[in-house]
Length: 223
Image 1: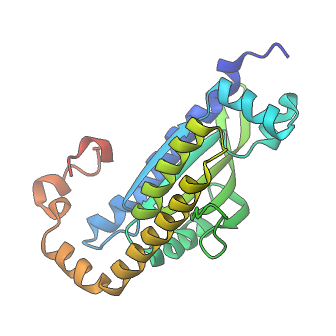
Image 2: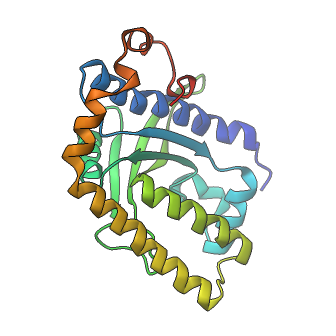
């Protein structure tokens, strides 16, 4: 298929940019009110052409219908501090009117065999272009910092071994996934202490930074 990939991917790039601003906006609204945000930070990316083609071949997807069959060409990730914040973020997403949730996958209650934990939300998002409105699919992953650390390492190793992990490494990854989840559980046990400490010292609540939040992107602020 002779496709103009740059033109095809443009709406996805636009969608990721818009959604990052909107999701980071939730965090800023909480902090402007002097509250602890359930969102720690937000990242996003668009799959490159090579990854789209490779995934289509591996999964037997029709490349001509990839915009309908592949849900994560546009991907966003919301990181939270505590496991219970995940449900708070999910409820915030469910209430939004600027996109439609079409699927949810709970890999926290039902972790993957590898040990992977995360909550995935697939949405339909309308992008306004010079050619008219284009509704695209996007996947939002919600996970804790510990879950994200583990998933990032596992993803890198997956590329190295092309999904065929040595048995010992597979077992170690499964164990470390449980250790990461134990860390999340322990942090939840002392949540009140952590939140109280963050209320006492939160650099975002300093007036000179708070006044700038309306115009500054999260990436512009050092942590």
